[in-house]
Every structure is written in structure tokens, then in C-alpha cells.
Image (cartoon, rainbow over all chains, first blue to last red; front, side, top):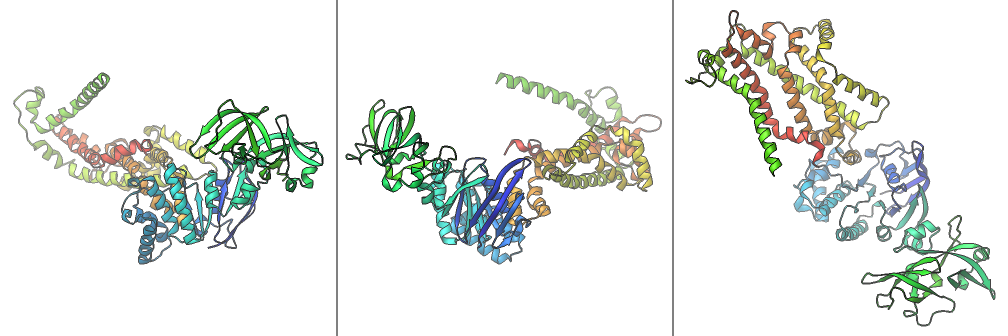
Length: 367
Length: 272
């Protein structure tokens, strides 16, 4: 077990900067998820930690040791690949034993460890099967087993669940979480799936365009995104962003645009917000923080606005509504029992205690 | 469906036409020359192994000796370049180094070189190294000549193997060479089988290089001995055909044994 520290790490491919001066600290035993859209540099970052890509600038430490020039085999890490990368000519047993054999672990010990891990993962009856005879989920387990059996300092996961079907993915996600509870090995996990990130990570690093935009625990990332990208990337459907102005009447602050005028609650009306008075801002509010008067019969004053429903998606346990408020689209995640029809002019209630404001130029959060 | 039948008919016809000379050789080898003189299909049919035995134990050009030499040369000139080419192909397929492009181009150019062009330089170099008139020399010459196409063929195959396998091996604790040995090499077996069948057949059938490098009757390979079976005053077609039959039987056997892998290697990356 070990901590992993990245200091000002940069990776360039020719002139293209894939990863730009990132700093990351993963504590001993922590499960950290790197999340972001395709091409944001998350996989490159993971591959640099693995030693599969050279670091252009900066330093990577594993267990307090600078590993920039240490080959992958000497970093004492294990990696699970997206396509599993099982050795097709070896059976399950040898796939798992390969790393131990190369490290000259005694045969008896190898046998003991392989069987123990196989049992833990429920593949003990598949030890003599070749990878092609296994299902996707079983292959995934073998790939995990190959990593676990080595008992490395750090686990690296490169989108390990993205090749599985939806149902299996949910199950393996839970199993991964359970496995980490049990092994407590430092883990770094790359995914573009925000649900995986939210459920697995102790901390999440949201990346875009080669930089880490926010690094915090899942709840903070969700409740207090530090910029518009993080706010829009985490959460589904994404947060609503509406152009508005900060205005004042009777000493109270409002967000206002042609379609709505909503009171900024007192605890949110900080001096920073006040400094934007009269200026344009981006008003952010999550779809689940928008209700209807049917759900909130007595809304707080100055928290309602009307919008015309354009699309209605009933997902069983929730109702997603796309509505037009003046010329801007607003998405609401509602109780499925609410009576809303396409074309209706509906009065919505904004839960303003959960509102966000962003600077339209820097895209950084104001509150 | 109809198109299929047409294609099959053409294929069978082509195969028959291709087989006619082979049938002729079998007929000539196994029947007395008087019989064959008036046409292959004219009865009576009397089969005997006289010609085969005659070729095998010929006093001046015994095919048993030629066969032994050919087997040595063909095996050596197959295994050696296959091993070297697999290493080269791995390097050229996977490592990124300065001059890789030009090197590949050079190898491509070597493929276009006609064998006759290297006859004289080859003779001189072998003479200088004292390898003239030796089976080792012939093995080396064939190995060198076979390397470019083998490298090309194997490199193409290696590029179809997923890179993640190698990365997994590197993380598991293997260096470059062990990765090659334990992961890449075993996965290349179908391609290696194809390469070996083709190279073996070409080396076996070669006449030209042997003609340049070997002139001691005891070291001659089997293809060099067939013409010696002609006889001085008349052409003994029966003996010649028997010699040809013995000669072609070996690559046929090799193909039959490795056919399974051979076909798999040729369709290589197509089936994953």
C-alpha cells in the first residue's frame, strides 16, 4: 500500500499537450476516480502512473519514491484494462499466475494465492478455461484477479466496466466497491461515467482539456462545483444554465432575466454576489431542484416562474420535462405523478437554497 | 447460389488443369517407359516401383543423398530466418525508433530484387568467407534471401495483436524480451507456421542458389540431382519423373501437417 503523488505533471505528444501541469495526491488506501470526457487526459494520466507513458515534465511518486524513470514492472502496480487484455493462449490460472511467475514467487505460494483470489471472485471452477471460453463478466473478473493476486501497492483501473452490459456493469461496480473495502489497496480509477465516479470514489478528480478542474469528495463535487464544466458534467440530466443578471430591489438580490425573477436567499447573497450587481451571470440550478406547485403547494415567495412544456419523458420513477422559459430551455426532474402535459404553461418552483451562480467569462463559481 | 455453383465449377476445372502435369508425372514414374511412350491413358497399366528405386539408388546421383542434404538445408534455412525475422518483425512493428521508416522501405525494396542480380556478389562473398560448396553457406544464403518477406509478413501480423497485451505483460513484470517470448511469440504461431511452410517450400524447390554455391556431388541438394538422372545418351523420362515425384513429396507432407495453422495464419487478423 502506498500513496501516489503527482507534481506538476505534463505530457506532450509532439505539440499537443495531453496533460497540463496537474497535481494530484492520492492517500494510502484511498479510492480516487479520474473522470472527464473523451480526450481529457485521464487515461494518459493513468498510463503515466503505470509507466506506460513517459512523463514530459513533473514528478510522480509512488510510496514516497520518485518513479519517473522506473519501468512499469518495478513500480509494484497492477492495472486492469478496458478490454481486459487477458493472454489468449493461457488459461485463467496462468493468466493470474503469470506476474507471480515472473517475480519468481515459489510455486506453492503462487498456487495458494491464485486459488484464494479465484475463490474470492467466484471463478475457481474456471481456472482451466481459456479467456475465449469465458463471458464478458468472467473475463473482467479474471482481469481483476490478475491484478489482485499480485498484491500490488496500487491498483490502476482504465474504464474497466465500459465493455460490460448495463446490468452487469451495475453489479461489478458494487463488487468493486466491496473489494476495495476488503483489500484497502490504493486505487486510481479512470472512467467517463459519472455514476461510477460518484459511487466508487472517495474523491473524484474531474478533468477536462488536460487539467484537473476540481478534486474533492463526491458530495462536494455535486453540491459545490467550482466551475461550470464540473457543474454540467456531474449530474444527469445536467445542471440548467440560464443567462441572467443580478438585480436589487428593496435591498434584496435577485437573479433576473426576461423569463424569471427569483430571490437569492439571504445566506447566498454574499458580498461576492453583490459585487456582480447589474452584471450578467450564469444562473445554475439542477433539474431535481426544480419542482411544480403541485409538488410544493406553498412555495417560498419569489421562487416561482412559468415555462411552457415542450417535451415530457416519463422514466418510471421520474419525469423529465423540457420547458421553454422565455427563450431559454430549462430541464426539470419531477415526481412521476405530477400532471404536466406538452404545451402546458406550468408554474415551476426553484429550490433557491441549491442555486449556483457562475461568472460567464471565467466560468468559475461565484457561490 | 447460382453464382456459387459457377465459381465452384471454375475452381474445379482450374484444379483439374493444374493437376494434369502431376498426374502425368505419377504415370510416367510408376509405369514402364514403353507403356507411356504411346500415351498415358493407353492400356495396359503395369505399375512398378522400379523407377522410384532406381532414382533413390542411382549410382552417380543418388536421391537418397540429395534428399538428406535438402532436408538439412531446408530445415536450417527455415528455422533460422523464422526466428530472426520474428524478432525483427517485433522490433519494426512495435518499437518507435529513428530510421524505422527508411529501414522498412529498404526491406520493401529488397523484396523486388531478382535473385539473378545477386548471383555474382553472393558467390564472391561466400568464397571470401570460405563457405562455398558447404551446406552452411547455402543455409545462410537462403536465410538472408528469405528474411525481407518474412519480416514483412510477420510485422503485418504482429500489428494485428492488441498492444494492451504487451502493456499488461510489462506491468506484470516482463521486460521487452520476456514479453516477446511469453506473450507475442506464442500468439504468432499461426503466422509462423505459414511463414515456415512457404519458406520451406521455396528453399526446397530452389535450384538457382544451390547451382551457384554447391558443386560437390555429395553435397548437392535434391533439385540439383534431378537433371543428373537424365542419362547420357537418352532421356530416361521414367527415372526423371520418379525423381521429381520423390522431390515434391516432402513439401507436400510439410504442407499437410501444417495446413491447419497455415490457413489460419494467412487469414491472420481477419478473425479475432
